[in-house]
Amino acid sequence: AYTEERRVSHVLTLVLQELSLLCKRDVNGVGMLYDLLRSRWLQALLKIYECLQQYLGKRPVPVMLQARALNREVVELLREAPQSGEIKELRRLLRAPHLKALLFAHDTVAQKDFEPTLPPLPDNIPENEEAMRIVCLVKNNQPLGATIKRHEITGDITVARVIHGGLADRSGLLYAGDKLVEVNGVPVEGLEPEQVINILALSQGTIMFKLIPVSDRPVSNQTTLYVRAMADYWPLQDPAIPCADAGLPFKKGEILQIVDQNDAFWWQARKVSDLSACAGLIPSNHLLKRKQREFWWSQPFQPHLCLKSSEEEFGEFGQRVFIAGFRRSMRLCRRKSRTNQQSCYTRCPSSCYSALAAPYEEVVRYQRHPADRNRLIILVGPAGVGVNELRRRLIASNPREFSSAIPHTTRVQKSYEMNGREYHYVSKETFENMVYSHRMLEYGEYKGYLYGTSIDAVRTVLDEGKICVIDLEPQGIQVARTHELKPYIIFIKPSSISCMRQTRKNARIITDYYVNMKFKEEDLQEMEDSAKKMEAQFGQFFDQVIVNDNLQEASAQLLSAVHHAQDEPQWVPAIWICSNTQP
Ligand SMILES: Nc1ncnc2c1ncn2[C@@H]1O[C@H](COP(=O)(O)OP(=O)(O)OP(=O)(O)O)[C@@H](O)[C@H]1O
Image: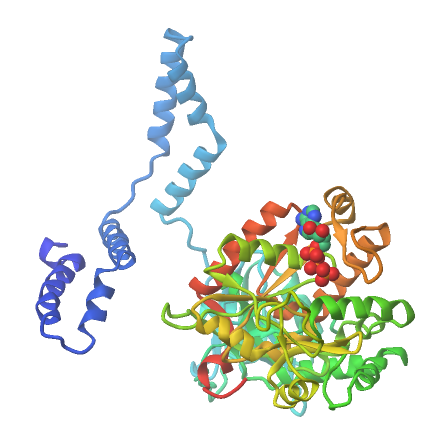
């Protein structure tokens, strides 16, 4: 009996009463426990639990017959009152296919006629029951969820792996290492794995395995790991995967839950966006890295210019010069150089950069504590897409909440400027010292002067309790991704060229030569191309993508993204949270 006294919420009320007495006595942790037990989500969860408990005791009764009887009565009533709107509506409802399907499903469950009928066990079961196991699985158009292999020495066909959450795994009857003897009555001895797969593929309904269980079943003591994919993976294009259908395709930036790392080459993972799905095979860290390297080296001569060009760009103090820089000035500088020479990533396939990086980055769920500093907001986007316009509007909407970091420059201060307002004006020597001591997020040279955004300038904004919003060349992202700044990176993406032709009619592009120059067709094309390359090369770092089509809408999306970054839990690199050291 589910009495009032035994109800969980009743017990909880009693606990809360006791806790409220302890609260006054300042016992360590009581306040937190009290808040937790009083939280609305817990109360709601308990209500659901209790409702379910009540229903567990009840046995559902089939309702289709009553529904049919009701339908007949309604037909009668309709004959008597053909104009009645309510009766017509009821008749329509009772005939609706979705209601019929619902009632049918209800009755199926009520009559418990969903359990499969298994065939009788064969007579010739060996005497030594321990040695042989008969496993029957009902396969309804779904994959078996296991892969098989042939033992190199003995030639035995064994289960290579059982996919987490798949049919075989849910049955709890098949294990990696089990030796197959028969499948649907066909002996597998001497068969190729492909032939066995064919038998499995052709069988519908029930599959019966006769197998010798593995003697020492591997104990899985693995902890679940979450990673951000830093590369794309398409199992159907991978000839090395043991079973392409069991592969999990993923795109860079997606968060994966790794559930099995037993195999050195093939791990099992799910996407956090779909944790109810069964796991799929993904290349292990080691294997994916190897694949990337092989692919990279297999490219014709031209791709490797990437490494060369970045070397060329090392400046006089041995650090990046052209690959990072103060945005506006650096963009103008690049625009000029682009006409003579393509930039690094236009010459290389997208794999070029990622071949040098780790293919998976371990991540954890992070919720900023309200007392912690705000996360740095970084806007990234192709030149002219509207990064500065959006940033300016955001800051103007609430300058007490949002601010940008004041850049440093070696150029001379103009009469109307104030040190620390437009720029921090420093000597070349001071600037170079800041670069040497890694205090610059990005910097570059324009018309003989150095410009840059320093970590100190960002820190100053954050220390004031504000949200610091900066724009950065994507090459600077890696430098900014630190435990201290915990940046949230928003990619501002152009809309289609046809849309931009409309929306950018009055927009002005920034150039070195003309003030107020209109966007030309090639500017729009360049924006689109550049955005594609940025996504291909740096997409894995983007926490959010905003398409800047309608300016008002994009501004609103930016505002909500910025608040989302500060107030909602996010996936961040594990190293930011688990270690107190940089990065
Ligand atoms: N959604 C939009 N609709 C119409 N005009 C826009 C939109 N977004 C930006 N603009 C206009 O486009 C022009 C370029 O924008 P902005 O200066 O912000 O570009 P940017 O991405 O910062 O590039 P750069 O670094 O080269 O300045 C500006 O005139 C701006 O007002």
